[in-house]
Length: 238
Image 1 (tube, helix red, strand yellow):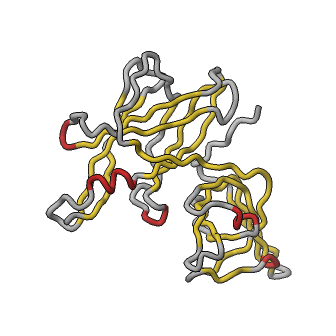
Image 2 (cartoon, helix red, strand yellow):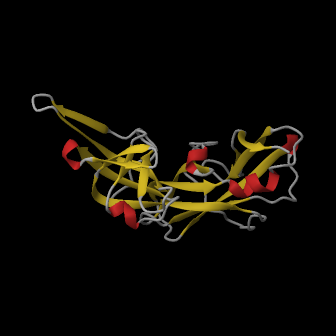
Image 3 (cartoon, helix red, strand yellow):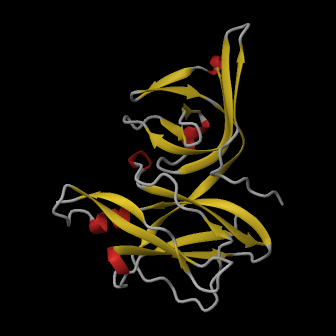
């Protein structure tokens, strides 16, 4: 069974140039791409989080906007470019398998009580926090053990009745595995923080404020849950 490549590591971006012919081309491997819909609603295009390149393709038109995909692609001068909204976008060729990056929201409820919770091998700090271009999505890379790939699911819970210290919003992160085993896999989940934004936005006397947020989860190396460092979500005040 093929092991998933660590998705949020720096991808190998291969840039080649045929100087004699003046031809320009490049390729990206295992890039995470956020899908946008044009202002006219006619065309989809994507932003590569690995390189910042803006791309489009015929296959991309079949995908749901505001989602994340992971795939390899290449561009050559002969493929051309398009003007979409205010951008000049490369028309790329997508190669190989396209992987969906799971998306979820923060559930406004207490986490389920589980006697023997499934533990994370690793849960990294979130990427792209406070990046409005990604629609309030925070990306988490995590590692879990299972019998086969793509059998882990991550859910986020916020219990509004739960007391925390220092005005910190506590979000519980739970892991379920459909096929338990000992193989180690790494994956990414995009959690949309707009539920938290809507819950706390507008109740401050200042124009902006930073919500303090930490994540609680069970790591394999510990018998008790641990808390992440504190992160901030910038929201509008009154």
